[in-house]
Amino acid sequence: MLSSVRDRARVSPLLTELRRGPAFKVFCAVVAVEVLLRATGTLFVPWSLSTVGLTVSAFTVCAGWHGARERRCRTRWLGQVAVRSALHRFLLAAVPAVFWPMAAALPVLGPSFEYDPVGLLVFGGTLAQFVALAALAAFALGRLLPFRLLAPALAVGGYFLLALMSVGALAGSETSPPEPKPAAEPNPSAAEPDRSAPVPHSEETP
Amino acid sequence: MITADDLTIRHRRRTAVDGITLRLATGVHGLLGPNGAGKTSLMRVLATAAPPSAGRLGLLGEDPTHYSGIQAVRRRLGYLPQEFGVYRHFTVREFLGYAAWLKDVPGHEVPAAVERAAQRTDLTDRLDTRLRTLSGGMKQRVGIAQAVVNDPALLLLDEPTTGLDPRQRERFHALLREIGQEATVVVSTHLMEDVTGACDDVTVLASGKVRFHGPVDALAAVGGYSAVVGDGGD
View 1 (cartoon, chains in turn green, purple):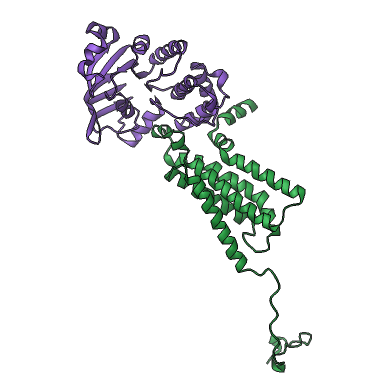
View 2 (view 1 turned 45 degrees about the vertical axis):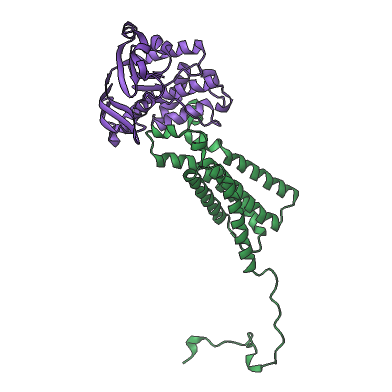
C-alpha cells in the first residue's frame, strides 16, 4: 500500500512540477536567507522592505522563465497531441509558479512585517496574494511572450513597481510625531471641555 | 487502422501531400521518401497535430476532424516527432509520468505503465536520471518510451532511429515488430535498414504523391527505392 502511494508520487505530474523548476530553489534560498537574518538578529526595517522587493522579483523571474519553458525546451509537440486540454496543462504548469511564492510569503515574509512601520502590506496573507498574483501574471506573460529577455525585464519592472509603491506609502505615512502648531491666542471658548465633568444621559433629557 | 481518401495537406501555397489514398491495417508500415516528400506533414496530420486541408481521414475508426474523434484517437496514440524537446530538469521517470498524464492514462496505472515503457526501451536503470544528463541516443529512447507509455493502438514514429547505436536499433526493430502484432505502426525513415528490419510493407512518397505501396520485397522487385522515386528524389 505504502509503496503503491510512493510509486504514484514519483510519477505524479503535480509533485514533479512542484519539486522541479526554479521556483522551489528560490523558495529554499528565501527561507535560508530569512532564517539566517533572524538567527543573526540583522533583520530590521529596511531589510524587510528590500527582502520583499527582491523576493517578489526573484519569484517573478522564475515564473516568467517557467512560463516560457515550452518554447525554450521545444516541447510544444507534447501539447499538440495531448488528451489534456491547454487549460489543464497551463494550470498544472502554473502551480509551482504560484505555490512556492505563497509558501515563502506566508510563514517567512509575513512575520517580518511586524517591523514594518509604514503599513505597507501589513498582513502576510495580503502579501502572499500579491506575490502569487505577480507570479501568475509573470507566468502567463511567459506563456504569451516566450522571449528570453522577458524574465529579467519582469524582475526589473516588478522591483521598481514595488519600490514606487513603497515610496508612495512612506510619503503618506506618519513616521514621527506631528509638528506642533504655532502658538495661537488663547481662546476660552475653544478650550477643551472638562472630560471629568458628568455628562447627562440623553434619555434623561426631556 | 488508417484510412485516407484523397488526402491533401497544404502549407500556405505549397502542397506537401497531394491527394493520396492509403489503407494501413495492423502491422508495421514504413514511410520512405526524399527530403520534402511530405512525410513529416503526413505524420503530423495522422497524429492529429494538424488538420488535413482536404480529403477524408479515418484513424482507429474515428473521425479526427471532430473534437470527440480527436480525443478518442489521442488516448490510443503514440507519437514521436522528428525533432522533439524534453523537460531537461525532469528525470526519465517523471517525464514518462508526465507523458502518461497528458495521454490521460488512469493514475493508478501510471507507475506500471512507466516501468513497462522503460523496460521496453532499455531504460530501467536510467529511470531516475535527469534528462539533461542523457546522451542523444538515450534521449531518443526516452522519446520512444513516451510514445509507447499508453500501449498505443496507433504508433507514429518520425525518424525514430536517429542516434541509436546498431544494437539499440536491432532491439528497436524487435520492439516495433512486437507492437505491430496488435497495433498500427507507421515509421517514417530515410534508412532502408529500418524498413527491411521491421516493416511489413512500405509506402514511398515523393513530391507529395504515393509512388509505391506494397511489401518490402516488392520494392526491390520494381528496381528499389531509387528507381521508384526517380527524379522526385534529392
